[in-house]
Structures are given as C-alpha cells and as structure tokens.
Amino acid sequence: MIFDLVLEGGRVLDPSQGFDAVTDIAFLDGRVAATGAGLEGRTTKDVTGRIVTPGLIDLHTHVYWGGTSLGVDPLRLARGGCATLVDTGSAGPGNYAGFLDHVIRPSPVRIVAFLNVSFAGIYAFSKRVMVGESGDLRLMAPIDAVEVARANRDTIVGIKVRVGLHASQNSGIIPLDIAKQVAIEAGLPMMVHIDHPPPTLGEVLARMQPGDILTHSFRPFPNSPSTAEGAVRDEVIEARNRGVLFDIGHGMGSFAFKTARAMLDNGFLPDSISSDVHALCIDGPAFDLLTTMSKFLCLGMPLMEVVLAATETPAKAIGRPDLGVLKQGAVGDASVLAIETGAFDYVDSTGERMVGDKRLVAHGLVLNGQWWAG
Image (cartoon, rainbow, N blue to C red; front, side):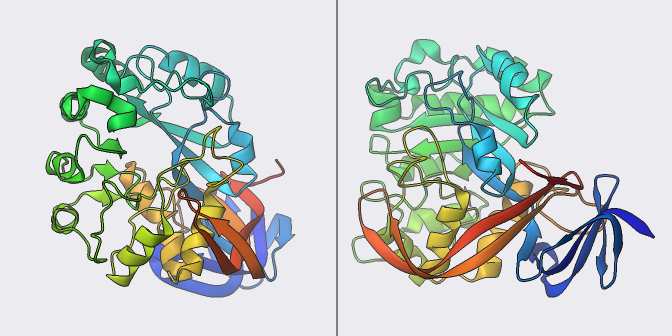
C-alpha cells in the first residue's frame, strides 16, 4: 500500500501506547495509518536520529494575534513543533467572533480556546498598561459566555477565569464563582489562573471540580503548592485525588525551579506542561513549549512523562482524545524533535538560572497527515 506520507527511520514515541521504537510511521487521508518497517509513501521524509511524537499540544497560549496586546503569532509557535494551540482566555464573549474569523479559522495550525468569562477577555496586558480584567465585576458576562460557548462547540473547549491580586484585585474569589456557574451551565471544564492572594490557593482549589484545570500550578510563593519545608500542601493532594488537573503555564511570573524541585521530589508530576507564551514572555523566560518541556527534562522528569504531559493528557483535558496520540486512525499530527546535549542556560520566572545538559528542538511538523513546511 502507498501512503500519503511516511516518516522513515525515526524513534517513534507515543506515551498513550507505551510505544518507543525506531520504525517508520505512515499517514493517509489525514490520519495515522500504520507503523512498521519498509512503508512506502508518495512523500517520504528521512527522520533518522530524530524523535517522532504525537503532535504537541500547548495547553496554555495567547494567540489572539493583533486582537489583544498580549497575543503572539501562532505560526511562530507552530515552528516550535506545536500542532495544537490552546488559547486560554485572550478573548471573551464580546470579541470571540473576531478571534474566530481573523485568527482561528485562517491558521494552518489548530487553535481551540478557553473562553474568558470577562466580556472582552484579557484586553489590557502590556509593558505599560496592566489591567486585570477580573477586577471589574461589571465586565463579568455569564449569560453571554454561555451563549457564545454553546454556539462555538467546535472551537471553544472550556471557560477561563483569572483570579488573584493582579488579575482580580479586590474582587477576590467572586469571578471564579461566576466562571464556575458558566462552566457547569455550558458543560465545559474551567481553567483557573491564580497569582498572589487574595484569594488563597486553598480557596481556589476548594471550588474546582473534576476535570477543571489549575494553571500556574508550580508557581513561586505566595500561593505556591509546596510548603516552606518542601512538602506538597494537603489541599493540593486532595484536589488531585478528586480529579483536578495541574497545568504548568510557565508565563512571565508563574513558574519557579524551587517549586518544581519540591513537587517532583515528592512524586507530584504536572498533568500538563504548557508555556503560557504571550507577548511579554516569548523572548524569555518562557520562550515556547519545547523550552518549558526541556526544563522538566533537565529537572529529571523522564522523557516519556514529559511528552505525555504535552500530548495525550492535554488532549483529554480539552475533550479531544483523537489528538495527542499516534494510534491508527487518530488525527495525523506528529512533531519531529531532537534532543541536543551540551550546557544550556535556563531561567525561571523568579530569575533563578539553571544550567541543563539537554534541550528539545523542533525539526518538523505533520499536520493532518501532511508535512508542514511553515
């Protein structure tokens, strides 16, 4: 049989199947078609010495390019190996139509979104102007959010709310309570941003349901998930036990090596690794998804677990089990990567630096069964 595309001779790594072998992988009609030796394709790419993973999914990005001040060009992230970008709250119900028509639909890389419960999303986020959209309760738009979410089931995968001193000021926990109502009414998961108190981490987690996602989950003090002694907080363990998901969401100020070491030392791995890349951190400290993944690789997290946290787990979190896997019949997305060795300088959101001995780099991307030249 002749396939549309064959990636030849790479190390195919699919955590969903526990699969890790040097072999060929073929795509046909936009789907994963076969793995094995000697596959024949109309187009063949020699990926010897590379790692072929399911198409990477960045669960936390901001790609309302040109529509919000924090948006970045989704093509730049695709060139970094991402097949699916999840925008988390850049747009709200008042401007989602523009995001959909001007960015999501024209994009060659898949974009889905968590809709912000605030009417205009994250509308004032720059180096000179910083207004937390959740701080003005007049902008909370629960009825509009439910209507827009229901009308865009193909692209809206959840509800986003930002709480904390920077995001919600004196509104505290109230925006989260409103977002929770919206998520339940729309039948969608909720992603919660947390920064400095108020509210506290415990107050936030107590309101979250199974399938909801806490982003910035390995953030520094205050509202860190670890104690001063390096233990995992009881409320964090309890939340995971009842199905709350913990996402990294590195961003500008939301990831600390100190926290990550404490959590990993306690066997508490993140459910998903994401970049929270936006205009103020794309040139550091977050850079992109592969840099964030590389940090965890250098912190000792096994490669299979790192890839899992950027493929199958985020796919399940957004209700798309056909993504993030290389099973026969799955959507034909694949990322072609390599691990370089050396001495690489990494920095977290607090300014702490770490010299790592490896980094992941992108060498190609397959989208819907076709090689994407970008």
